[in-house]
Image (cartoon, rainbow, N blue to C red; front, side, top):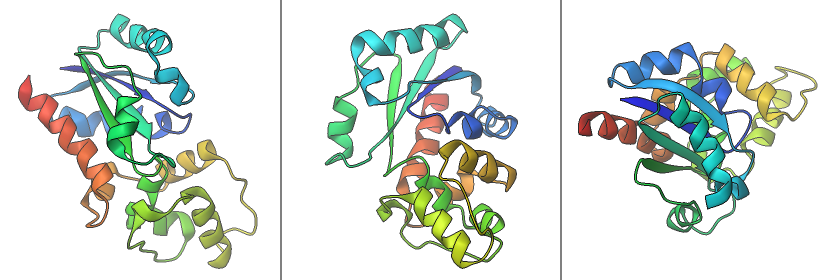
Length: 189
């Protein structure tokens, strides 16, 4: 099955539109045709999401995953309901943000920070990027680090971030749900 992904932010493609992610989903007999960046939750409304969907459909996508951050929304269900539904589309909510997934991969996080690091409850962090910068300063991994989601994504990719490891974290069901949904889509094909 050919898969397209619409993500909310600019950092997700640095993790999802990679050789590593393509190899991962190939295990499920899925082929990634592309990742488009919506640029925010307002872009998921009916008129706006169509342009992102069309890009992926033109590339041959048979199924579209919409990845959106929970942010400060009250619950996952309400966040999903804000996104225009389509029969060929699955909505997955990252809790709290996609960057929280980095906190769930202890291996890549430790590589990035230069010190062994484990986060017990990655989903509960309301500002993962600031947490990672503060931990890096405390560990003296870096004296200064610019708060940039793109820079963080590039660094986490270089340090071997793995969605599989994030999904294996015992207290991080968000990444696990993402992988489970991919497997379910593949088996339904």
